[in-house]
Length: 173
Image (cartoon, rainbow, N blue to C red):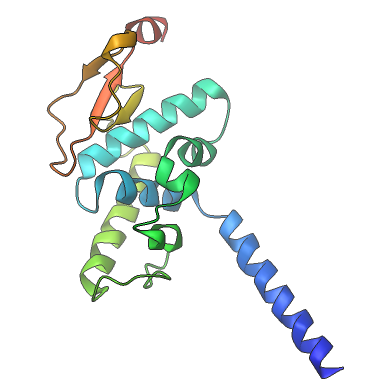
């Protein structure tokens, strides 16, 4: 009977952890996306990425959180080199799988980034690239299909994030 009780407690605890993961706050999901896509410190690039996600979510009729998870490859399929990104939490505790030395420095960076995403969502931080409908790296070339690079002055420095607009979309907005 004790063994059955222990198994039931373990199953219940695992289901609670899964349910908690499903309820991740939108700001937390966006902070994870910004870390994965552009690093810990480039708040302007993060703001522009959130703008792209917000516009796409509105146009598609889905939540910002759903769009962020669908749009960002590291969130969608995980990042084999950085699996800890999926475990960044709103209390900024050391994420599972963290193996990069002391968490103390990154703790402060993540708290700042998380607060920033909350401010962007609250409308307190302007979108630095309102013409962008796509972001990505150099491998995501869109010039051939009518997309034009916008906001080239937003440079994260590691691998450079690029933003693209599509004239026909911007004219309709």
